[in-house]
Image 1: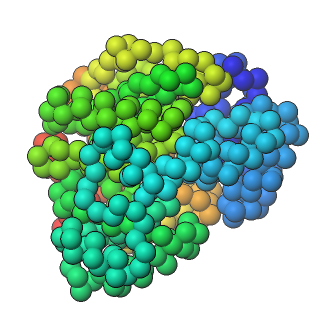
Image 2 (image 1 turned 90 degrees about the horizontal axis):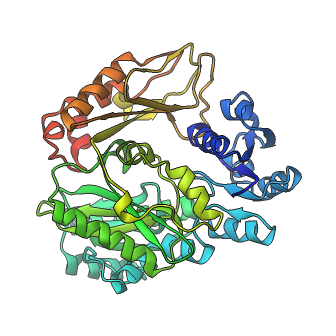
Amino acid sequence: MFQKILIANRGEIALRVARACRELGVRTVAVYSTADADSVVRRYADQAVCIGPPPPRRSYCNVAAIIEAAKMTEADAIHPGYGFLSEDPDFAEICAENGLVFIGSPPAVMASLGDKSVARTLMRQAGLPLLTGSAEAARNAADVRDIADAVGYPVIIKAVAGGGGRGMTVVWSAAELSRAYTRTRAAARAVFGDDRIYVERFLERARHVEVQILCDAHGGGIHLGTRDCSVQRRHQKLVEEAPAPELDPDRVAEMCRDAVRGALSVGFTGLGTVEFLVDEDQAHYFIEINSRIQVEHPVTEMVTGCDLVHEQLYVASGTPLRLRQEDVVARGVAVECRVNTEDPDRGFVPAPGLLERFTPPAGPFVRVDTHGYPGYRVSPHYDSLLAKVSVWAPSRAEALGRAERALAEFDIAGPGVVTTIPFIKQVLADTEFRKGQYSTGLVERLVAD
């Protein structure tokens, strides 16, 4: 096991990793921007280093500053969390060049999976089902039109380098295609520095189901079941649950086998997520593989009793998998609700500010991952995620009731601060959602209503 890990992230995930390290007797280094000088993780970690001003490119994405902090504090590994540099193969290579272990998949694997066109080709070769669409990145607008005409509308245009729900546009007719193509390419160039795009069939009533995987460097790989992440706004998740409800067990088993097979076929190691779309007939189609810990990992931990960060660290240190597939048994149902500082009534625009009151819920089988506290100022420079409220219960109905109770207890107030809690309560009360028969269009429908 490592002696000291630098956590190249902020917020709740940085604190989550720091806690796991402390439990394993591993010392930690927190890095922080000047905007996060009062962060909880800075006080919690064994050491802390300021790496720059608030803009991420000058702090949390400042590779030189992070590497220098790791060297200065004599860290032997870097945990990137999620977002920022977590799936950057160049950063992983730089870590290796400086004698640091990057806690994630190998750079070459991340590079292949980060290119969605290449990833589709690799998974097709591994035998995973894919939606019809581009065999490779589209060359130009005429190419996009030919593919869309062949696939049939609606289609979705996606950035090859996309991730985090960004760089996607649904196109409902040929009349919209040219403008959507131009807009998506421009967005991809601005966000990812890569304007390549591809096209695939769009499922109107699909569910977003993902499989948690864990693979070691010795050829071993297991899954830890499914999560349903269909409650999304602008392709960003709001509510997740494990296991995915109302799915045929045989279909689930097939999806999980596909996830492990696909990951091992490309030499994947570490903790990751294989994402699928599931149609109304419960057929599943590969979307992507994320080479990092996911925001929604707590629900998997709650139903399996497995600490995913612990296992991630053991695998990164070279230890063979400590779990066999038969050791993984899901019990009950867990639901996670993301509390973001956003205003749902204004299109989910960020609504940061000073937290004058901040009292998270408690009680049996309630877990709150957060970096907030009374007096904390939510920064406008970063993601709006403030807290994750996760609950567990023996049945889905009980878990949803517990989630409603927990959200009702959450007391957050401050000048300008608005959260997604009222909207999530609407989601939990929705008839389709209660039946477990919802799709990725749920949020759009609720907003329209």
